Image: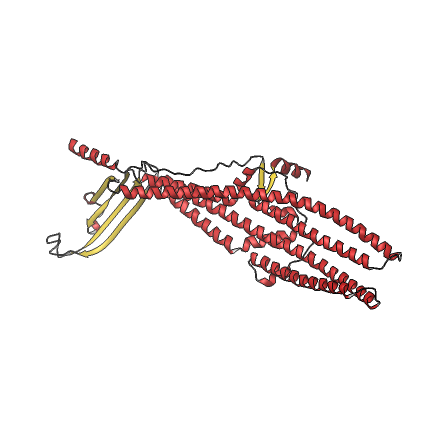
Length: 467
């Protein structure tokens, strides 16, 4: 007896040769703790109060092939998680067989069995249970949970990217339509101005040096008109594609005036980026890599499981359930990792490297998200200042236009100063439209950087109460 225990002790000692000494992760996670007094509105487009935009978003999010593919992955991850949970339980099965067999006269059984044909029956309920002392199945379960969490977060990231892209094209369509309408007005003004210059040239009051630039300006506006019409068409095609529809469906979009920009907080906590879906997905991938590293480390330890069965076996079905037909088996099975030390260490080292890559990818995303959020906030402040300055310029130009019109109506001067003043106002308004679109794009950039619309929770409650 002592000899058997000595052998077992020696084997267990040898298994200790499979050591993970010197192997460890090298990377460290950047800690981001989202504040509890802020929230992220993932249905941010509804804050523009545009029924058409809401409808386009609903269609796009429902029809997108990319999102459908990710949702299929979520279902796959859910099933794999359920499978991992089932592995934590003992398994029970019932096996049965009924065959008719002729035994060889020269085989294991001598005559009269040998050379004769008999019915063979067997019924054996059996069970299998892995003791899992080291948490192998729990690690598998943690990995599957992380995979499912990553899939859910990636689906949210896909929805965010889709909604941002659709909003960009939608606002671009509005801005280009506004520019196009103004270009048409400017063309009318330019043609009127060119006509007056020609009349003055015929009367000897102007020269061709004034007429040629006016004609060139008209050609420039006509080129701009064609380019804006083409951009409008491309925006419609892009919106239709984002909705999972054919290009002609974009022609049914009604163009409203350019949507006013949202009122966003002047400052937002940097840690809000921790709620962004792609960062959440990368954090879940770290959980997966950590669980897989733990699983690789568990392979260094002995694996013990229990199995057994109890049943009946007989030659001839009539004897199958008799007591002397009973058969049984029970015992442990032990796997000892003794001679595969290098393989185990290489596998664990690779898993630690995968963990390090997941951590560094997460850290890089954190820093990039911080840069994007800071850049978006800076752009919002800069564009707001430019819009204010541009509005003041437009007021000044409008006063100049009013004065020129009064002088023309009073007969103090011809219509050329009033037309030039009108062109100056129209050009300034084109610039204001561009700045308004930049403001919207900067808002979308901040929303994309944070994973949605940032809002202090207290403000949200106050707004709800006000409503």
